Length: 127
Image (cartoon, rainbow, N blue to C red; front, side):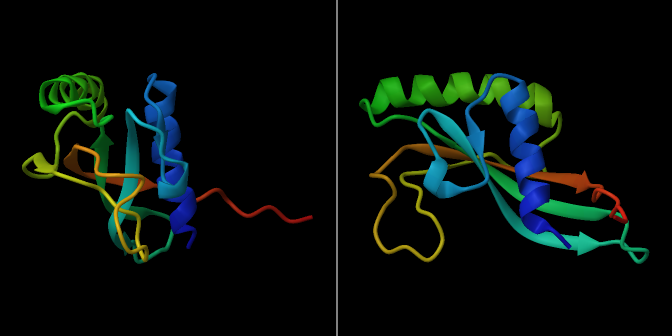
């Protein structure tokens, strides 16, 4: 099961809609969106993967008001794509990639949008 492919695929959808999005926190540019997986449920047949994720909308640290304005614009772009978040949209004072101490890349204001999406793995081809 290719979890990275599922997250990359959703990031590509966001990118197609004009957002700077990535599933790799080391490639995150601000303002942008980090697609972070939180739970995975394969179907019994294994042909579908339900993914719970959070879209971490990250703004530049340009002062309180400017950062919130930037987050608001990102949210306005994301909501039509997401349609219905899985829960409350919450705020975070910083974001950090997994397994890294400290803050990445520096303290950045963020909003977290919980979502669920389905990933259909590419069929394997015989050579």
